[in-house]
Image 1 (tube, rainbow, N blue to C red):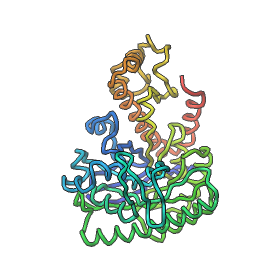
Image 2: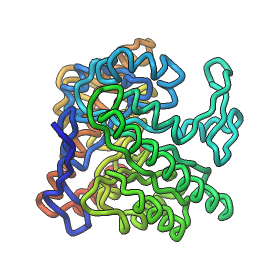
Image 3: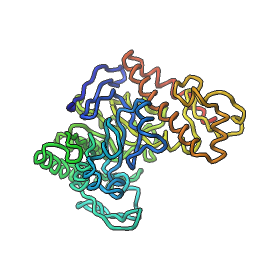
Image 4: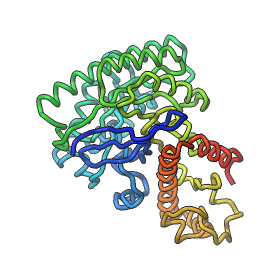
Amino acid sequence: MRFSFEVFDTDPTGARRGKLTTPHGAFETPTFMPVGTAATVKGLTQDALEQLGAGIILANTYHLYLRPGHELIRKLGGLHKFMAWNRAILTDSGGFQVFSLSELRKITDEGVRFRSHLDGSEHLLTPEKAAEIQLALGPDIAMVLDECIETPAPRKIAEAAVARTGLWAKRAREYFLLETERNGAATGSGLEQWQFGIVQGATFADLRRTSARQLLELDFQGYAVGGLAVGEPHATTCEMTGVATELLPRERPRYLMGVGRPEQIADYVALGIDMMDCVLPTRAARHACIYTSEGRVLIKNARYAADQGPLDPVCACVVCKRYTRAYLRHLFHAGEITAAILATHHNVHFYLDIMRQIREAIGFGNLAKFSSAMHARYSEGPA
């Protein structure tokens, strides 16, 4: 099976419904990628992810490079074999992780010199090194190293980050093309790999356009919009995403990184986004926050102590079919690990089901109606 991307339907909002085919299977778009940073989605087995219908998950270059190491994973047959996952994988380059280690790293045009958060050892992550690591890991989709900056950012800092991101993208692309031509395939899995560029530019529309144009010249197989949902208002996130997608080619997949809240997802899809990821459903689950068709539920609240109803009355997941709110509340208060497992299963199901409903809405041309309903359900805050 080889790579391909097709768009089947479009919505009046600008949303598109399609299919992305990879060497490890195909999945419908728009899609949500559960985050499996260290080659595992916290709280879920691979069997559970398959039952939930996840067609692609995200893993992280930075974390896998530090532990257990990309060369070991290469020797063990690549990331798919290592983690016993036969569906698609996308690996982030580690740019956001080193951005978050502000006290442990120094950024120059050469790359990012940082100290490991595990043992303090010093490392240099360059665009070439990030591509090398991902070729060894062998995911289906590999992201280039970019410079992610804080928001709000002074214009001069944003300009410098866009210039550096463009420079790094060019170096990463050249390294990737040379290595894949030399080896004929991704060196970890033995299969073809796609490389995506990342549009930066903070909250400056002209810089977003500059960044997008720089990447288009490099002819990536797909394009991501990064550096958003890091503190700016949702309206600004949408504005900057729209600025970028206006320039990105229709025939290639578009990925908005690190989003979003349930009620926001349809807004991003309406801007032409095909892929997204976020730690929110898994992280919130571990903190007893449940996403439902009726809004957020803080399950540890006393009001659920004797509630015999399911987490979500209209949810078809195995957790809602079997367990009560009272039981899940008890598990959280007892400190049982099962609480996080069940909550995570439900939240990931909820996110994947939102994407299913969005794809269906696009097919009927009524995404705007679906989006309005989601915003209404989540406008009142958690219960």
